[in-house]
Length: 382
Image (cartoon, rainbow, N blue to C red; front, side):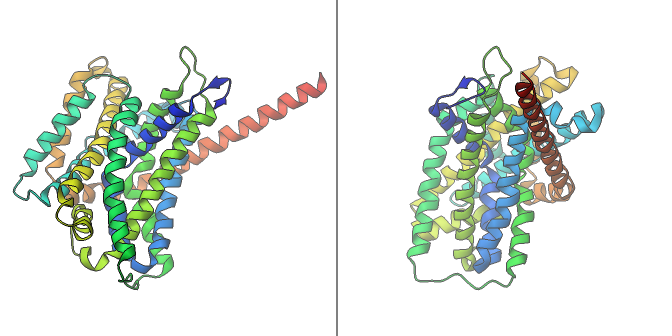
């Protein structure tokens, strides 16, 4: 596969696509589709379409915008001026990083762990998680390679077993999905706004940098445009498939799970469908899924803070330790505590970041059209 004069192997595209999926598919991605399906029931198709817009298409636009800008966050936010282009990504990083999504990953993993070891205190589980995150991010290696080659195959295999087994049981049983009390439009809106809570567009602004850097030609700032976008599209397609499956599962088992806390829905569904033998598997699946995203987010958080805060320049290990400590403390507030803090902020910030992504893509497309038109005129004149 080649573009812009650079040849990229299909294997590299595959690795990056798997890495993109693994980076994005973490805590909220496991929890929100299930809860949404259990609430919208027979209208689950409409809610999943709403989720696809803000949870898949919009994050892909963010990745595409970063690709157009050669992985430059500064260029993405250049419209806000020098101060705004520093403050906004910093605030986003705090939300998707140690003050929000990373500790949320830990609390979702804890919900699964509790389903078969209920006596484990959250502080002990959180301590174990931050230790693993620290070990995985201690070195400054290529996070896309590490996640794409090692974390993703385990994660995909475990998810396929749990979600596939639960789907098979739901589809083969005679019971039908309960009629929904919401209208199709109401279900669509529920899915649309639930996509905000995944925070994947915000994560795309940071993950996009890692993915673009992975494809950047050595000693050059050239980006193989088509292979980079192909990898991102692959990751988002996998995300969409899993979302649809989870929304359906939430709807199919709505009568059994609607009363449960969000992090315990998938473990309960798996227990119904696969029996007691699934308890260890589902716990392993959820913990690995959440830790993969936590590791990726910690890595980009540390890199960003080291680059943007003068005091932390060149102090990667100190920055990492600060992120780990904050993550641990926030994780102790549990899942609902974290979401009650984040939800109002997301309602304001998400539409703003969507507008920024679209603006960057439109400007890039306009410049390309103008440049191509100029070249054609020059060729005709020659």
